[in-house]
Image 1 (cartoon, rainbow, N blue to C red):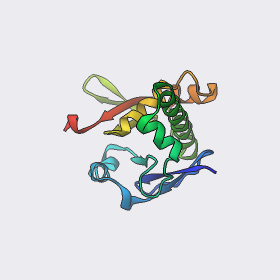
Image 2: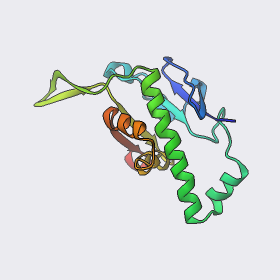
Image 3: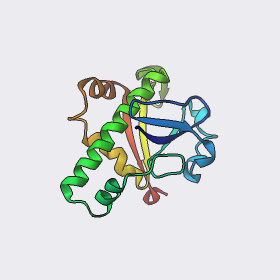
Image 4: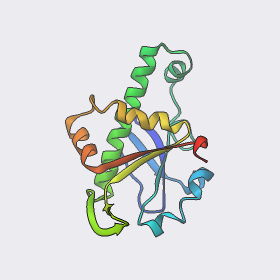
Length: 166
């Protein structure tokens, strides 16, 4: 049985992933991301917010996963977050494929002396979600070669966002 996570989007897509089921649910979008929705289109961006497990509409952690999070050994926690990173890395690749996200390219537009990059994907997270986003980076050496290659082409950056930024 797969787990469920929730994807909140500006209304473009609902995705299914090999291991997880992602659902569109704008009513669950945290206030932090609600403020980005009206801004994204004017910046030529699609905003896709994924609720991690344990949020409403997602699969709760198993009792064993909860035990590992609360009191597991360093090795158990390492394995837990590596699995989370692999699952999220595969999800990002599936997102790229299903949403036909274009590969990043430099456009002829400029901001000052810099050319603007179009296409690709920036992976961002808020607060505790940063731990899960960082797990994507941390597992890059153990994901399938195809996943690693696709992420290297399409991911243009990672955005760590938290209360320390406001």
